[in-house]
Picture 1 (cartoon, one colour):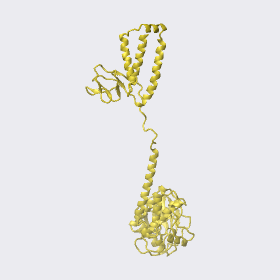
Picture 2: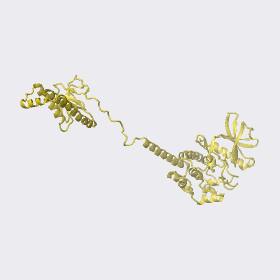
Picture 3: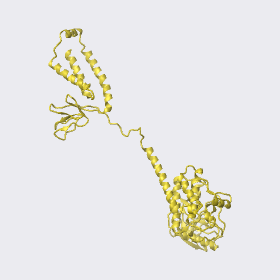
Picture 4: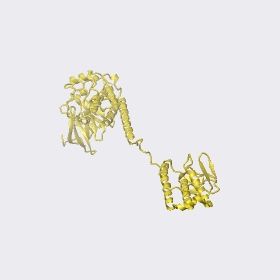
Length: 465
C-alpha cells in the first residue's frame, strides 16, 4: 500500500493497526493536506457485517462536530476496499501516556474534563460509544483529547444485537493483552466493560460512564481497576468485586477524586452518574478548588511576615529652626500651647497662614519666652537627652578651666559682695527662664530651653570673673 494512490490520496506510511482496521498516513493531493486513511483488514473486507459496522463508525463520528472527537472527512471505496479519510493527529494514545505511571493531578483533571465533554456531546446526539478505553483516547502534542473509534457505536436507546467480530480500534497501542470479545457474543474490551454490558443487557449512556470511570482509575493509579490472567477472571471481578481504593495506590490523590471515581464505578447503574455532564461538572469543581488552594498558598508565601516592617520609619530632622515671635503675638492654651502668627510673617518652621489669625500648625511648640520650636518625634527624645547631659557638663568644664578665679578674687568676693549690673540681672532672668523650661514637669522644653540655660551660665561666669 505504501506509495499507492487511493482516490486522490497518496499513501505515505503505515501508522498502526487494530482488530477492525489498518491506518495509514496519506497526502490529499487535491487540498494539499495530510490525512489518516483507515482500511478494513483483508480478512474482513468481504464480511458484510464488518463492512456495515465500518460504515456505522464513519456515520456516527461524522455526525459529531466536536473539538474532542476525531473529525471524519469522507467514507469511500477504492477497488472494492472501503476506507475512511479522517483527521491526522500527532501525539500518542492515552494508553502510551500512562505507561503504568499515574498522571499528575493537573494533567489528569484537564484530560478527564475533555473526555467527559466528548462523551456528553455523543450522548446528547443519542450515540453510545461502547468501547471507551485508553487505546481509543488520543492526546495531541498540545494536550487536546480526541475520542477515536466509533466502530461499536450505536443509537440509544435500542435493543442490542450481536454484530460480528472483535473490538474496533483506530490506532490500537501495542503492549499488554486486552482480551477482546469473541465474535458474535458481547461487544467491547472486557477490562473496560460495564456490568450490564457483560450481562448482555440493554445499554445507555451510563455504560460509557462506567467505562470512563475505569479509565479515570487507571489515569490516577497507573494500573487497571480489574485485572486477571483470563477474560473470565476479569468478568467475575467486574460483576462482584470492588477495585482497590485509588488512595491506597496513590496517596497524593485528593479524596474528592476518589469519590468521583467510586460513583462512576457503581455496579448499579441507578447509583452511577446519570449523564456525562454531571461527571464533568464534578471534575471541573475539583479542578477549580485545587487551583484556588494553590493560588492561596502562593499568595500567602508572597505576603510579608508580621515581623517585617510595612514601611520605613520617618527620618529624623537634622536641623531645628527657632523663630522668635513678635512682641504683639498672643498665646492661647487649649490642651496644648499654640501661638497666633500674624499674616505676612513667613517662617522656616511654619507654612504661610491662610487667614488673619491662623493658629500655629501641628508639630510646633511655643516656649514661655515666645520662641516657636518644631517638636521632634517621640522616638528622638531619648537620644536628645543622652546628648544634652554630656554637652552641658563639657561646657561647664571648659568655662571653669578658661576663667578659673584666683584665691584673691574669691576672698574679695566674700568680703565685698558686688551689686550686679543691669546687664547681669537680665542675663540671670534669661538663664532662669531656660532652667525653668528645661525642668518643667509634664513637658519637654526642647533643645532651646537647655541652650538658654547653658548660655546664661556662660555669661554669668564671664561677668563674675
